[in-house]
Structures are given as structure tokens and as C-alpha cells.
Image 1 (cartoon, rainbow, N blue to C red):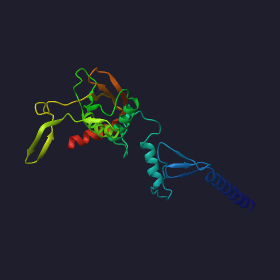
Image 2: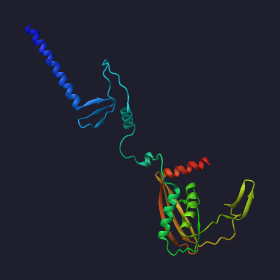
Image 3: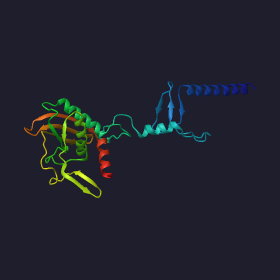
Image 4: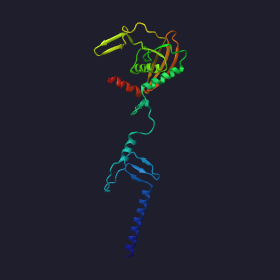
Length: 241
């Protein structure tokens, strides 16, 4: 009888110790799905989800914490160089005309000996290579935006792509052309806006200047860096059109 009592007492003592350990573990660290919650409530991630013990009678149901864990595994924290990994935002409010406006503002701020009476033409921006005659979608569109931006500053902008007359066709009436033989023979200009583009994996560096046609003097200069995702959007639109 005494032996039995001792055995029972020992059993209850063992149960008490187990409950005490369990309660201590639950208050300090507890397993929730794929995470461990520490004493301060901070979530720490593990390389693998915490497995459910076999024959425990428990069934694991994924929830939002599993999605958070999956995102943590797939997207490693830390800076990634866009030169090697690329960067493309889901959306952006920045457009090419914003960069053209920035260029026009810097050109006018740096302009010397340039008056509102000077006739200014805007040429396409070209790649900085041996020929200096290779333009891009960016180079052509940027020059078109600059026509409006520079005119807003009061410059007398000349459109030298104006043909000698209007060409009437069944699909429209045209007065602009790139055919040299059809261009107007005489176009008065005092200055021309031109520039180069330097491309790399991160984007395009645009160097613009206003040059005097009389003595080739640079009367204004500016530069801007356009991110690659802006240029890629332009190329995609051009390929669709």
C-alpha cells in the first residue's frame, strides 16, 4: 500500500514536471505553422516549415503566415544591383515628357546669348558612336517633346521637317516629311538643339545642347539620366505600333 502511494505520488510529480515544462515552453516560445514566436513576439523564419509530429492527431492548415513565409523565402532581403538583377516598378507616374521638361528647364537656366528672337530648330538625339547618325525611339520622341517644352519658355522654334507644300492623299493630308527632296528649300535658323544618348543596363544618359549655327558655339547645355524601365516601355510601344 505504501509502495502504491509512492508510485502514485511519483506519477503525479512527473505529470507536474511535464506540465511545468510545457507551460514554460508555451510562455517563452511556441510554434505557429512555419514560424517561431519568441518572448518579445518577434517572428523568426526557418529554412523549412516546422513539421507536425507524426501520430499526434493534429492537422496543419496553411494560413496567411505561410504566404508571408513563402515571400520571405522567394525574395531574399537586401539590396539588389539593377545592373545585374534589373528593376521594373509595377507602376510609375514618371513619363518621358517629364524628363524633356527637366532638360528644357536646365537648358534655359544655362543659356547664354540666347534671345527670344533667335530661330531654334530641334534635331533628333543620336547614339554616341562613330557615325553620330544612329537615333532611337527615345532620341526621336525626346526631340518632339522638347519642341513644345522650349516654346513654353518663349523660344521661336522652327520645324524644319515642314515640306514645301501639302500632300493630299486618300488617307490624310500631310505637310511633315523626312524626305530631303520634299523639304522646304530655305529654312532660317540661328540655333539648333541637339544631343547624344549613352546607353547602359541601368538606363540612358542624355546630353543636350543648343548650338549656334553661325560659329558652332554651345550657348546652353544640360543632361539627364532616364531609367531603363522608361526606355523599355517606349520600345515596347514602338514594337506594338
